[in-house]
Image (cartoon, rainbow, N blue to C red; front, side, top):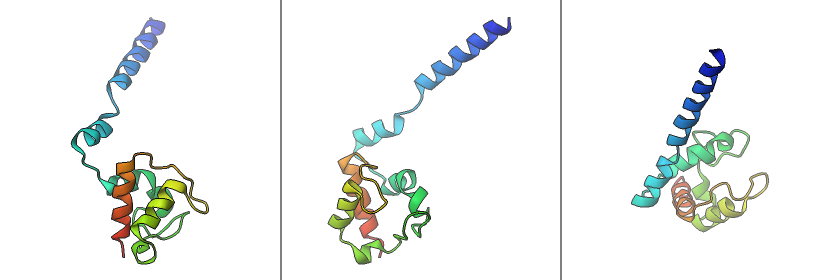
Length: 105
């Protein structure tokens, strides 16, 4: 009986896992809506802090004073120093994130 219950529970978890996920990226792709703050929080905040003031990565709260949007975009795409390249893959996301960060002056 315990074996049957464990098997059923495992199957239920797999079924639920297969049903979820991926919804946000599909919505963004269909509507063209890109939320750069959401991208930042998911991809960058662990190193640069949720308020952009730095954690293990540098303070970028006024990055727009130092770097142009194109320079920021280049760093997002190619990395720099300890920051790896390719953390944000979608070009629309990169463009939106670079623009959003460039506005932080």
